[in-house]
Image (cartoon, rainbow, N blue to C red; front, top):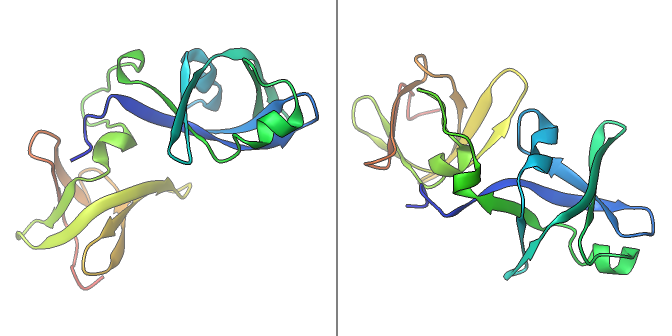
Length: 169
């Protein structure tokens, strides 16, 4: 189970910006600018890990851009596109009751309220209306993350999420 990993993903490097080594960033944090508060970053890309710090960071249009330590041109920056941005778990604020970091849910077993196993949480994504769990078992299922309606119980210690969900969906 990956529920208590040491580092937690908070975003990824999504592209290049200009010729001086600036990078576009996609943030999982809310609000998105909170990603700038966590330092240092651990970049995970193509089985390599690199600790880095921000030299500068700002909102640019509807997105975010950063300048990283030691990245001074577009060619150096291009090697980081696609890298996951991880931060040490202890840097994150504690969650409130009924709130969870997505990283803590990935890998948990999903079981219906009558005990049928549906698979494990592969990932989560936002839809605007609500978040959705991608559950991989004998097939892939998309289960809306609606606490109290669809999601009955989350037990991080036992590694299980209990859901009210028809296994035929």
